[in-house]
Amino acid sequence: MARSNWVIAGLAIVGVGALVATGFQNVPDSGQVRTGLSDLSQVEQPVVYDAVGPQDGATQEDILRGFLQAAASPDENYAVAREFLSPSYADLWSPTAGILVDSGTREFKQSEANIVTVVTQQLGRVDNHGLLTNSVAGTQAELRFEFERIGEQWRIASAPTGIVLEKTVFTSLLNAYTLYFPDGKGDMIAEERWFAKRSRAATQIVQALIAGPSEQFAEIAHTEFPANSKLIGNTVTIVDGRAKIDMSSALSAVTGAARERLITQLSRSLVGVPNVDTFELAIEGVELTEKRVENISSGRADRAAYVLTDDRVIVQRGTELGQELSYSSLIANAKPSTVSLRSDGRAAAMLTGQGLVYATDQGTQLLSGGSGFLPPSIDRWGFVWSSVTGSRELHVWHPDQRAKILELPELPGQLVQFRVSPDGYRLAVMLQVETVTQVQVLSIVRSETNEPSFTAASPVLAMSASGSAVDMDWVDNEHVAVISGSSETKAITVGGTGLFSSSRGSLSGALRITGVDGSSGIRVLTSSGELFQPRGLNGWQQRLKGVDVLVKWG
Image (cartoon, rainbow, N blue to C red; front, side):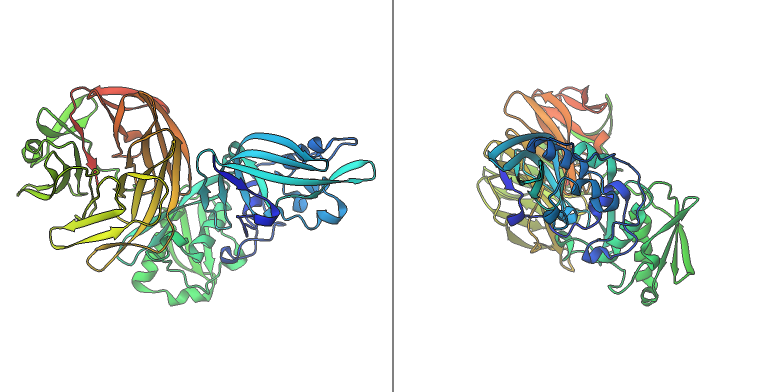
């Protein structure tokens, strides 16, 4: 079981600033995201938690429970929560140093006469840019609190910096928003951030766009906002569905195509902000443009679901079969166990009894013979990714370029599967780590000819689930769907980097999974050849029988 000692001497989350408070009262009216938000005095309140001060004669545990509850209210710089602290410590405690998100099940242990330790299941942590870092399943956080007598009453004399929020409270206050950053090749890289649900989220989003992408995508993407640009008044005003973004004169240097990319960043990133339909971009009060927010699909909304059945690769729509793939017979004749299509559908990478096979309507080509291969993945530019069981090397092949080998960084456990995201900039790797399934995501940088390499950024944990790793696929550019479990009935889970995982129920004999048009379009193939689609939040409905292969995209 993983363990996280979240104490003063070794706090892993720092500099979260007022993001903690913004969940309750929204963002401050001053401060740059780049340096962390610190002014908690001028914020609106989307949700109010009434904090109650300490009661006379309360035990150490009573004081601690009351303190944890009161810390959910940042009113007047956490005034009520500070009432639970000793006078000498009240001004030293730093509630804005981090958010630890837990399951809400907390055990209070009296480790010494004046020390109480809270043990809780840690689900994730949030930094000052709204980035959520998931925790491995089973991670426990130990929070150590010291007490002293002040007169006849117990008070807390030492506590971990930051606050702890139960997941249900956290998600009632903050939303995950998708921010977009250009990559220099005409693409926009999506990244998830957590900000307040109310209209002031627009301010946080614009500040985050100014600050630029996270470390994960720093080598891939950038922001078109100049580093010295500022949001005038440090706020985005919203009136009648129109967000006014008034920037400093530094933005004047952004012209032509760069300005268009900046406008695209805003139009896509502001999607989902309550009561925002359009935005006006201005420089020191002079309007540059007004544009509607742009709700776009993320990766696979227009992809058909293909299956291999009755020796045909054919579109599946509900219980019906549609158009057959043009080179269906070539694929079927290879007797594949897995099939992955390039994003345009004109090429496929297959795992067969002979080895790795590449197929187009011009014919098939054996890329590598033998056994022990993991299912290959083919990215949008036609690069075929392959590896063998037990290896840390990925072989990347392209019909028009030399093959290359990419070395995976140090990762826990055993590699079970890997998949390139629809946008081609992320590699999800599925790992078996003892009794836990993990999915970690590596960032991919592309050369001028789109040849892939890994960035220097560390892999990011997208999700973890109990049980054996079975199968995985991207649902879109941000979400992955996983089958895991050690019994006949397998769990279906959807998660992603910067997002909490959610259960999609379970299915007996689940063997393969793919996503074609968002979470509602997930398909699951069972070991008996039955194809299922979601019904409701956690239910599954059989749509076809006799399916040999569930075809994936990418």
